[in-house]
Each structure stands twice: as structure tokens, then as C-alpha cells.
Length: 251
Length: 317
Image 1 (cartoon, chains in turn orange, green):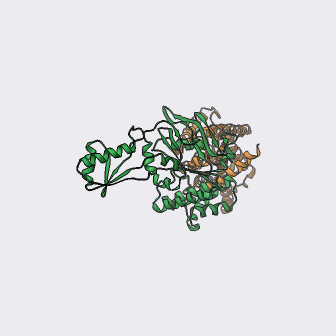
Image 2 (spheres, chains in turn cyan, orange; image 1 turned 90 degrees about the horizontal axis):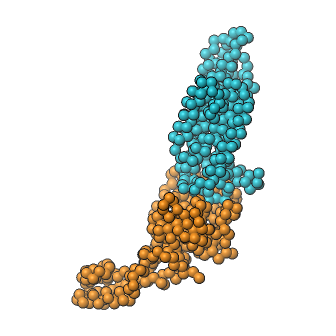
Image 3 (spheres, helix red, strand yellow; image 1 turned 60 degrees about the horizontal axis):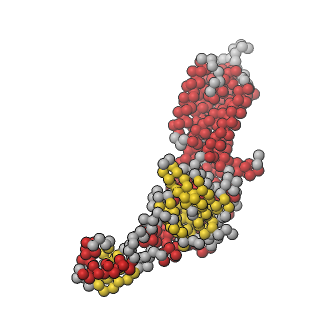
């Protein structure tokens, strides 16, 4: 990569982190995974006792928490975070300022993408930590349940798989949010995508839309879908950079 | 050093059927304070956006510091430019200092640039440490100016910087522009509706109308070519104005005098002929005339005298 482009991207990312201070972007990033982790805690707490070698309490928990996360909560978190990151510029009429600076225009888009990707990673990590913490707490407070130790590797594997798949959604929603200032556009697309995906999953259609990647990867443990998420995310990001850099900066 | 900090050649841009900017040949001399004038919708902001690469021209070229503005030269040229376009782009949840930091980091400037810029615009450290959402309009405008001055620009582009400023704010802005003019290292292109303010600081002006640059040149030269109003001291000003009105001559009462506006630039009548005719009408109406005095032309009289011009007039060689 050209050195000045790399420097521009690093500067833009640093500046983006300053601009996001006080933007409230942490609320969906940590609040929504806390909901899913709370659900995991409820499932774990409701277990009377783990009986027999066939019992797989952690399997149920991972299915419940990560399933809910991958199908419903993750797209909503990404849509909300992308809207907030883009909204920081829209509400400050920041584009006309940023695009008059001696920085490659695409660097601002890449910096915004990096911010959303890092916040999505943080949300996924918060969910993982929350589920593990809930398991550790139940083991400590109710030893009579006989809960097996936290399956750290299974948790990390599920989290990594879901996160890699989510990068395509990160690119799609950031593009939408940067293009249209209204939060409603990104959220509307996310809700529509989630509902369509639920119907398609029930019909056994598989990962037809970007919203189906993470749930399908989780259900089938298919690492190839993670690669689709990574590659698709990169391609869509490249499209967003080309499109948004060439647009007139009206505000 | 290039003769012109900004030069455009047949710059044009359309929005649908509307010609926002048509064949503009702007020439902003290096080291000048260039007042960019024109009514709302005349194409000033679009021209400024074209100069900075925010919108792309349909045709024509832009040169900054003698170098064509291209995707390849863009970063190098913009490193020498500071801009404040309409309302400043500020992050209201951040403090003034954080706003400056966000831009300083992007420009790769040293930390000292923030303090220096705040000092130039006179924003106190205690105010700069407050969140922008608590700022008055004047303070926001001042912070916007500090953002534009952050890189010690060779070219400062200000689009309506006086919007929303109270008299104190206007005075401060004028002070900054005068200081920059005296230092002589920064060329300033400032668009404004405040003709009196522009006249106090500008060395050069350009007038836009309906997307075209109709007049451009050294302010002193343009004013020399512009007739000022004529003040006629009379016994009964109201009767004199009434008599003039009946003859179709525009005049107003100002205390004991009658103020006669100069003929439009498009008119065939010279100022001398119009004055002689007016005096004749007043005397024939039985009003005594004590004194006839031509006033010095102002930027306002120049602006209105160019109101009907549609062709480009450039006083530069």
C-alpha cells in the first residue's frame, strides 16, 4: 500500500476515535450484548442439575445466546453503531470540512469502517465475556448443579466465526449510513434483512443474504462462510470508498 | 511565488437545469484579501466548493498557487489551504480543544498548532475546554475560524464567516483579517453579505451575479470607476424630493440634504448630467440650493452600480 495512503488511514482512524468521544456509541455496543448475556445467565440459572454424560448445558447456552445474537441482535447492533458513527459526521456537517483536508478522501471511509468493525468486535467480545462470566457465576453460586467448566475454546470459536461473518454487514450498513443521514434507512434495512433471513432459514434456504451468514456459520460450523464474510466485507468496503469519495460533498 | 493564489478558467457547474456557476474566471492575487460578493444564489458558495474540490466542475479548471488542482495535486495543495464554509463543522459533544485536535491529527500538525490557532482567534483556554454545545454562535464561528487557521494556511477561504456574529464578533473577525493582511503571508478569499465589513478589510473584490463573475479587480480601482451619491443641501428637502420624484428621479431626504443616487451603470446618463438636471428641477420648484457635493463612492454604491451588469469586466491586466 502507498505510504501516504497508509499514513492518511492511520491519521483518519486516530481522528475518528477522537470524534466519537461522547457520541453515545458505547450504549448499543455494550447494552445489546448485555441482553444476550443476560439470557444466557437465565438459561444457566434455570438448570436444576446436569445429569448424564449426554447432557450438554453449554451447548444449549451457546445455541440460545449466540443464536439470538447472530440472527437478531448482531444486525441491529451493527445498524445502530454504523448509524451513530456516520451520524457524527452528518450532524456536524463534517463532510465539507473533512474533504477539504489534505487527506485521501477514502481514508475517512476506511476510518469509519474501522471504528464500526472495532465496536462490533467489542460487542462480540462483551457477549463472549458475559456468557463465560454467567457460567462462572452459576458454577460458583450453585455448585450443586454440577455445571462443566466454561468451554473457552468453543466460546471463542463461535465468537470468531460470527464476527468474521459480520464484517460483510459492517460494510453494507456503513455504506447505507454514510450515504443516507437518516438512522431509519439503516435500521429499516436491518429489520427487513433479519425478517427475510428468518423466513429463508425456516425454508431451509441457507445463507442467501448477508444476514444469513452468521446464523448459518454457527449452525453448520462452516468456516467457509467466515471467509465469505471477510471477502464480501472487503469488496463492499471498496465499493463504498469509490462511490462515496466521488460524490459531491453537499453538507 | 505564483502571481495568483487562486485562478480559475471558464469554471462552470450545473445542478439539473440551473447554471450555478457559468464560465467564471476568478483571479485572486497572492497576499490579497479578496472580497467575494454577490446576492444569495449568485454562485459564490458553489464556486468556493469547486475551488476546494468539494464538487467537481462540469467544465473549466482551477489553479491554486499556480498549480492545476487535480486528484494527484489535491493533497499537496489543500495542505496549504484553510477553509470555513458557511456554518463551521463542529462536533457538539466534544470540547473546543478536542475539535481542534481531531483536525490537527488529520493534518499531521504539531500540538503547538492548537494553542497558536486559539490565540489568533482570541478563544480563551477556559472556553476552549468547554463542550461546543454550550457555545454561543459567535464562539462557534470563532472556533471554526481557529480550525481553518490551524495549518497557518497560505490561502484562507471563508464563506460567510460573519453569519450570526454580533458587533463584538464582527470586530474580532475584522481584527483577525486585518492582522493576516498586515502579515502578508496569507491570501484571504472571503465571501460575505456585509459590504461595510468587506470594504474595511478587502484589497480586491469580485462580484457574482446569476452564476457569472460580473466585476473583479482592485477595490481602489473599482471604486474610482464608480460614481458616488450626490448630496444637495437645500432649504426644503421634502419639497425638493417631491419635485424630483415627479420627474422620475430617485432621491431621498437626509436631514437638511437631498441624497441623489448615481445613475445605474447601464444608464446612458452621466453623473454630471443627472446632477445638473436634478439641480434644475429643484430650483424650478422654488427650492433654494445651498451646496452640491459628490460623496466618495462606497463598496455598497459599487455593488449596486454593478447590479445590472451581465458581462464580465476585469480591471486586471
